[in-house]
Amino acid sequence: MPRGMTDTPLTLFNSLTRKPEPFEPVHPGEARVYSCGPTVYNYPHIGNMRAYVFADVLGRTLSFKGYKLTHVINITDVGHLTDDADEGEDKMEKMAAQQAQSIWDIAEHYKQAYWADVRALNIRQPAQWTVATDYVPQMIDFAKGIADRHCYELDSGLYFDVSTVADYGRLARAQTDEGEGRIEAVEGKRNAADFAIWRKTPPGEKRQMEWDSPWGRGAPGWHLECSVMSGEVLGFPFDIHTGGIDHREIHHPNEIAQNQARCCTNGLDVAENSGARVWMHNNFLVERSGKMSKSSGDFLRLQLLIDKGFHPLAYRMMCLQAHYRSELEFSWDGLQAALTRLKRMVMQAEALAVVETGDLTAARSHPKFAPLVEKFDAAISDDLNTPVALTVLEDVLATKKVDGGLKRAIVADMDSVLGLGLLDLKRADFRIPPKSAAISESAIEEALERRKLARAEKDFATSDAIRDELAAKGVEVMDGDPLGWEWKPGD
Ligand code: AMP
Ligand code: ZN
Image (tube, rainbow, N blue to C red):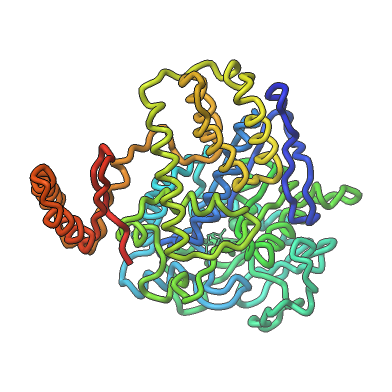
């Protein structure tokens, strides 16, 4: 998609081939993307949200490069077991039982909580949120279409026989029969990697969520959901399928096997039959003390960061500072550094608040901006190199003696990809009181008033004492700054 003189072709790393590849859309000028969404049985942790920040940057980049984007994210409200490989209990049923609530209420509550995080992180709304329970009839139809050739029935459900598709597991590069740690949990499975696409409700039991099917009353398998929702909404083959790197091992190989069963006619290239041409995976956010695990009680949710006084976009900044394919280690110091960097950029961008946006084409060809525009485009086109793209945007913000309107146009253009909301944020937005705040805003203003008087009387001892007193309560006084004070994120 040409964007002018500086256009660099977009290259994306395809997990299927383990190589960067030039992006070639299935439908010229369009980009159709499906992202595996959350299972809404609990709050998302910030690691989960890294997956959606990544998918968002991908979508924003495709828009920036001129493609008409259709992005779909699903909401899984049925069928996801506590273990990806057919083991354990249904996550939703388990939480509903623990909280003595209906599954539908659990799903609604955690879907809303996820959407709140999506908004707080400036993740753009996809064209469609597909909810798994809205697609059960289509799932049954899909399963019916492949059952004869690819599935077999056991007492517990309908199973997919992975030996019936060519090159099963090529995405994971796993040895199917070795099973990569898979346990043959279900008696009668033909291959360890076979998986349920329909799970029958055991006799005498009743699930909160169950439907009639040709294989008895029960619920769809988690892998089936994504094959059905992506194919229904985007059509096979579509362009890009995303998820966290854990999905490269089981969930996505299983989706691919189903898609292949559905699409495959002999002689067609298997890459074309994987459902999506490009499969992309973000690496994990890791945290050494185990606070990422949802079973750890006070786990790392975005709200926890906010409760400590961090603006949520500091976390987005933290994600952008790492390449999506690199592991990212979470630390409070790292988050603090990301917050400081974001604040600095917001302060520089504030000067642009009063100017009108200039012409983007003129701005892009301006001698001060043209090399930066080219560098930004090259970075983001190189498999979404956000760490470099960020530094280029900082260079733009630091450009002196240039028309403010043109600068604003470039900042808006680059930030349309990074999504930090630089032209909307104000210094004051960073005044987030930590939950543990020992002082109110009015008491801070009152103390600052006393301090002003002390300084006017050259009583520096009192003035310093007030500053220290505020510092002890988590408030930073900034002399010479028009805003005057800010909360310091605490421990
Ligand atoms: P789930 O709700 O468990 O299906 O996970 C939602 C998304 O988060 C999936 O794409 C996972 O692959 C991804 N994910 C899970 N844990 C992490 C993590 N620690 N860092 C990054 N992504 C993750
Ligand atoms: Zn999925």
